[in-house]
Every structure is written in structure tokens, then in C-alpha cells.
Image (cartoon, rainbow, N blue to C red; front, side, top):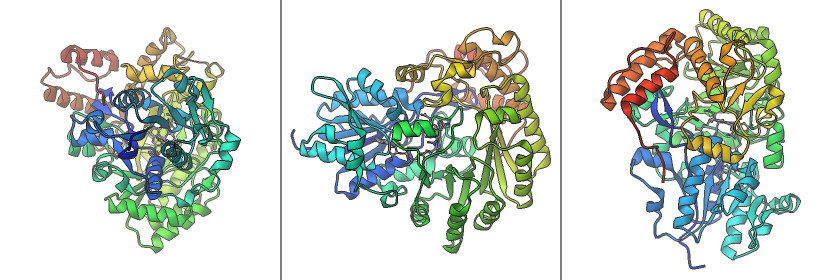
Amino acid sequence: MPATDLDCLFVHAPKAEGHYLPFGDFMNITYMPMGLLAIAEWLRRQGRRVELVHLGVEWVEDPGYRVVDAYAGRAIRAIGLSLYWHYQSYDAIEVARALKAAHPEAFVFLGGLTAGYFAEQIIAEYPFIDGILQGHAEASSQHLIDTLVAGGDLTRVPHLVHRDAAGAIVVNDREHAGRLLQGGPGIDDLVFGDLSVMRHPHTYASSFGFPLAYGREFTKAENRKMLTMGRAFFPLFIGRGCAYTCTFCGGNRDTLRKVNGTSKLLWRSQDRVVADIRRAMEYGYKTMALCYDPTPTKDDYYVELFQRIRAEGLDVDFYFECWGLPTARFVAEFKKAFPSPESYIAISPDAGDDEVRRKNKQPFYTTTELFETLDLLEASEVTFDVFYTIALPGETVATARTTQEQINAIAARYKRARRLMTWSVQLEPGSPQFERPTAFSMITDRHRFSDFHAAHGGNRSDTYSSLGFKIAGYFGDERDVGGIAEFEHHLQHLKCMEFCFLGRDPRFWASPSAGRQHCFERRSLLAERRGIPAPSRPIGDGWTYRDALAEEDAHRGERARATWV
Ligand code: B12
């Protein structure tokens, strides 16, 4: 092969197209997988010429940016795309297709949880994808690039799924691969907070926050004020693995074992975490977001981390998402390390009803234990958010109302309660619901990777109003008639009427009626901006989300789908 001027181009493609009435047109999956930064940094440290492009960041910089044009004329040895979240299924594949056409010389490969889970299907069905690296990929990426540069044997690259010269699918032997991985970087050799490996790191660091949509019809400042909690959050890598099996989670123990080869818990040393916090702070981050809590009753790791942060005097806030309930010692040390009200502990009971919670969520705790913890947070003056999930297996509209009552009780009782949120979760590949839908009285039209590709390339896949499934008998009335689209419609109306929490300040909870009014104000603002008539009325009895959307569509007319290529 002729000389190349780039060993590996990494590309992160967010989901380009999304539409939700109060957000307007938006992109999501704005965060890259944490591990992608570490892979790029590790390869660069090995002397490889690596570039990392985030297509959403490029859009913020220049909406006319096209990655194919930007790299035209470059000779690239390998192109690696993240396909971590299923929401990326359409865009990652279409960007890969375009890049392979423009760079037939390059080995085009994918990595991340969704790509790993569906590896054999993707290799079989998308001929422009040359390979998939399953699982944790710092060492295997290094092997892959070394092999490609040296012209070696791809069957020796650990965790690679690819095709041989005759087009047959080859899944490299894991045992052999495992041996080859020995001697690769350990978890503490990796750096997850060095943003200098990507293009426009400051734009990445200043643009994306929680929740996670970026409105294309709002300015950067409006996005920050109206769609985020006011700051960019840095996802801080703590460890990997999980011992639980929640019904809705695609990162459960068994799926991690299948995709990564192991689900074993592996924690980074606190030193390395503190070093990454410092790196992130250099880019202007003030809040670290943590979502790794696989041993909630054993608090030693975090107590030590919090004490280290305090000892080093790091002026940083934490947004800590608990999987279980925090211990009293955890709460006390958290408060000492992060005294500001902009540090949060987030609790996820998921269901208000104990039995629904028990069926779906691990580690289980009772409502009594939940309230004891909230009392403790209140008494300790720790700000907290509470997350609920609607349409869980075994839930009915009646048990969903227990969730609603619980939210009202929390809102009435606690001054420290901020966002009390009820989200729906789309069907996640690898979750028990996905693998055994009938066991959960569910029907779905997403069975294979190509179903996710089609769904996210279509117009019924928005993160907030679509589900990809129906639960039989959920409503117990005529709303149970019909298919998945009807179920999504009725559930969205239930959410709008009884669970809407859209606040003018996204850090705070709003009651459903205040939320619907604010939604109407947002839609009116967007209509004015688009130069179309204002919406006729807020969502309410007899006027559903679907009615409001149809009215908006009629005024807006056909609109081109957002795409990266
Ligand atoms: C921490 C976490 C988050 C964090 C941080 C995510 C991040 N930036 O990486 C936050 C809170 C931001 C988050 C958000 C979301 N998350 Co999340 N999250 C997790 C969690 C708990 C752990 C993931 C993790 O830390 N992995 C360990 C890290 C180091 O490894 P890694 O990043 O996976 O990277 C390795 C490999 O994957 C691979 N790799 C990754 N990318 C690439 C790219 C290439 C080219 C290659 C070769 C390899 C490769 O190599 C890496 C290094 O070894 C999992 C559950 C679980 N137990 O897995 C859910 C999970 C991954 N999240 C999930 C979802 C759905 C979401 C959201 C879409 C939720 C929502 N509706 O908004 C958002 C998306 C946000 C965004 N991208 O903008 C789902 C994904 C299911 C799926 N298959 O799509 C999971 C599995 C949970 C679930 N409910 O099912 N999440």
C-alpha cells in the first residue's frame, strides 16, 4: 500500500436527526464513549498518527462541515467509528459507508457496546465495514494498527470480527486473543481526560451537558440555559464491569460478559482519577459526572476518592448517579468534599411501586429505605435528583400512578430535591427485555441490528417519545388496542399529562401542568423563529403530543433529514 499520512482516523457520529416538540430539531449522543479518548491517547503515546473527529462538535463549529470533504486527498490506514449507543446505528453506518467509498485504501472498523453486541450481523450485512473490535479496545486497537502497518495476519488481532479473502466471517479466537492482550495497557496506564487528542476540544468541553440533547434551533448559549443544567459535565471514568441484571439495561452482567469477554468489576486507582479530574478542569469543566456504583454498600473506594479530592483542594462539583442507595458515610464524605448546592446525588428508584422495582431493578431497596435516604440527604443539606422510569415490565398505568404519588410526596417534603424526573427507556440491545420480550409481555419490532439502523434512520425513533416496544395490557382499557406506534402515542400522552417535568430552569422540577405550559411557550418561540403560525393550544385533554406534532408538521411542511454525509 502507498505511504499513508494518517495511521488512524477516529470518528464519533452522534445521532444527527431528532425532533421533540419543546426541543425542536436536535442531535443526541453528544458525549463520546469515555474509552474512545483513552484509545486515541494510548495510540498517540505509542507513536501512531491519530486524529479524532466528533461530528457534532464540527457542526457547532461549522454546520457545513463534511468529514468526507475534510479528509479528501489524505491517505488513511484505518478509520475507526464509535458505535457505542444504539441511537448511533444509522449515522455511524452511513458515515462509515461514505468514508469507505472515499477511502477504499482504509480499513474501516467499528467499536463500542452496540457494535460489539451485533458484530457478526454487522459484518455479514454491511460490506463496507471491514472489521469490528469487540469489547475494551485499547490493546486490540494497537494490535490492529500495528498489523495493518506491518501487513500482518488479521486473524491474530485480538477481539477482531472480520472477513477473510473469500468473504467468510472470521471471529478471532478469544482464548488466543486473550493471550495476545497480555502485556497491553492496564486500566491505570490509560488516560481518559486528555482532550487534546480530539479536534476542537474546547468546543466539546463547553457545549454538551445534562440532559443530553443539543438543540439545532437554539444558540449555544440558549442550549446551555434551556436544555442543560447550566454547565458542561465531564463523564469521569472510574471502572468497568457490572454484577447486576436489570431488565431494561443493555450493559448488564451477562451482556458485558458476552461483548467484553468479562463483566468483572475493575476499579481505577484514585490517583489516576484525580489526574483526569485535573486534566478535565484544564478544559474548563467544573462538574464531574459519575455513573459507576456497582457496590453501593461497600463505600471504601469513594470515601477515599472524596478524601483525596478534599486533601488536594480541587474546586470541583460532582454529579453522582447512585445505582443503589448511598451509605451514611458516603453522604457525609460527599458533603465535605463537595459542599456546593451544584453538587448532586442522584437516586434512581425507577418505579414508585415496590413490586415493580423488585422485578426490574438491582440492587433492590424498599420505598421505606428510599425515604430514609432522602431524609438523610435533606438533613445533610445535599442537593438531590430522583430518576424514575415509566413503562417497565410488570408495570400498569395503576402502578405508574404510585410513581406519580411518590414524586408529589418528594416535591412536597424536601427542599433539597431538584429534578424529579420520569423518563421512558427505549429498548436497549442486550437487555433482558430485548433478548426475551415475550417473557415480559412485550412486543417489539427491533430484533436485529438492521432494525435499529432502520428505526434510527426513520422518523419514529426520537429519544423522548419513542420506545420501540409495547407492553400488553398496560392501560387495561381501549388504549391497549393497536400496535407499537399506538402504545407509544398513548404512553406519551400519559407522560405529558401526568409526568411532564419540563422546567424553565432545567435544574428544577416543574409540575406536569406548569411543564405543559412551558412546553407551549417553547413551541411558540420555535414557531416564531421558523416563521410559521404559533401552535394553537398547549397539550392537554383532547389534544395530544401527536396532535400537536401533526399541526406543527402541517405548518412546517417537508423538511430535509439531518445527516453528517
Ligand atoms: C457511565 C455510563 C454513562 C455515562 C458516560 C458515558 C460515556 N461518555 O462513556 C453517561 C451518564 C453520560 C451516560 C449517558 C447515556 N447512556 Co449510558 N451508561 C453508562 C454505563 C453505566 C457504563 C459505561 C462505561 O463506563 N463503560 C466503560 C468504559 C471505559 O468503556 P467504554 O467507554 O465502554 O469503552 C470501551 C469499549 O466500549 C470500546 N470502545 C468504545 N468506543 C469505541 C470506538 C472504537 C472505534 C473502538 C474500536 C472501540 C470503542 O473500547 C473502549 C475502551 O476499552 C453503561 C451501563 C454498563 N454497565 O455498561 C450505560 C449505558 C452504556 N448507557 C446507555 C444509554 C442508553 C445512555 C444514554 C443514551 C441514555 C439517554 N437516553 O440519554 C446516554 C447517552 C449519552 C451520550 N452519549 O451523549 C446504555 C447503552 C445501550 C446501547 N447499547 O445503546 C447502557 C448500556 C445502559 C442501559 N440502560 O442499557 N451513560
